[in-house]
Length: 278
Image (tube, rainbow, N blue to C red; front, side, top):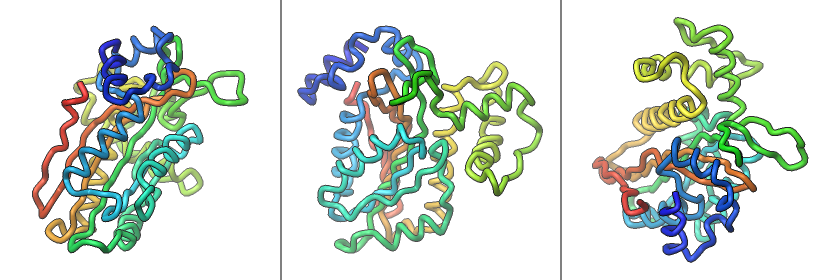
């Protein structure tokens, strides 16, 4: 992680998230252990800009579909991304829900498609989605300090709730049904059940919060790709997909761990590589 601190300062001339975590060794150790690919949010955004712009996705010709968890501690990053992207853009289409899962369905994607800037022959769509997790100054996963609240709370609370259910009642053979009075949380339980089952061979017992967050990211990627397949003509539209994990650190710091990134141009998918960050 110390290597990354120097790297960030060298590229951005920044203070590594304004020095917020330089004196939090337990956080840095846990971040390196669980998310060694994580970088400060501003570096991630700058790097993403460079990657997608090189692939032809620019502010003036692209609409971003942005999905984070609806937790209020995710809002500063949402605003940061929107302000970062919106200087010359039409805006960001909000696809956020609990856990960061993609619950807007075909109708939501089709609505966003109709909002894309019409400045090129092919509409351009950039999907950016991420679940979130917290690591506190003691390196404890899932714990976060919130303004005005003395006791630390959880992030992501929706995923923590699912973990507690699994510890108490087990995973169950079938995916739980949707509850119309608790739609988004029940959607998390319903949607992640088959993905957890697929990953059980690599997990000793039930997943911990880090593993469950990565499973959520995998489900988000799957859902976005399925929605794109059934709503878009890949030969007449261009789209890019970026999935990552937001990590809340001490002193209101934000880090992002890339999960996947690719662009699809004229039906041909090309990876967007983050290797140069490391």
